[in-house]
Image (cartoon, rainbow, N blue to C red):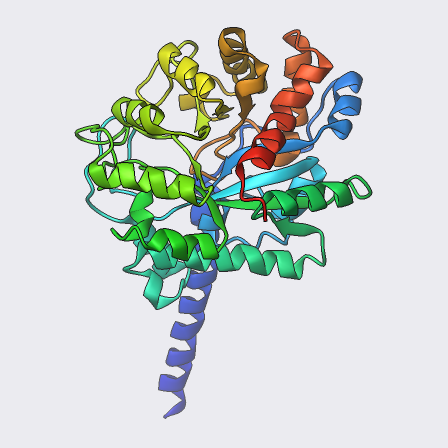
Length: 388
């Protein structure tokens, strides 16, 4: 008679275990779709050129979902084997540490914390549940663990010496790939500027002032008030520059963009964005902002999702690239996919050859394609990361 309670307990434990394994995957699969599944086709010229490129992408949120990035997955958009297949030399892995309830591109209050629930279901350490800084530290540890487990196939870049050494090795083995850590929104500091040092020591080298809501550093393009930099935000810029950390203006309000560029002494990036000239909405850059970022010596990473491009294919991405390069030059254009950012992309990271093909169709020269697909980012990082 005593066996039945034991059996029921075991059944409940099995159900809970299955829930904990399957739910994170189902959420990931639902949030990070692709329009077309691999394999991807392209012209012979594009395929041959693509193999020779040094490709770098300024933004992916792949760490957020708990996926084992050392494994080739059939869902989501990025993992280390697929980066190698796509000939990606460098992927910036950015971490959003908080997402408001009802997230949209128009107006979000700092209410709710959807990442809390993701952290619970995906079994992040308990200290991450109520600390945004701890969330960033946990994900930095995971990326370094992936590097350690890759047997040299994947490395984390923290300075220009790392980058140069890695690229030299990659000339001998084109399947090597690398990552660089970024934070999406300075609310990850938990209100303490001294946490910049904590995140720097963990390997973070890029950070944006805001994400989808206004915070104590500056306003968001999708915030309620869309304010500019606060006094604390101005000090944040100074401290970022002192550490040679890169300021990322993606998601920043127009006033925050203006305020940062007015005081910045070093170039900035807009890691993932569209442009109003081809896709007019609140999230994307105006012509004046494009020119201001270029005048600062910065880079504009063109995103792949529909809010960025008003399209669902590589041609829409290249149309936005062409718009920027016609106004400020190809040297200021880069890739900024927003892969695994809870967006539907035209392809996963093995499909970047479709962009190469679309750029050839659009009349870009091979040297221009090399620049946009990654050489601009490599040049920028060599000049702006800490030396060692």
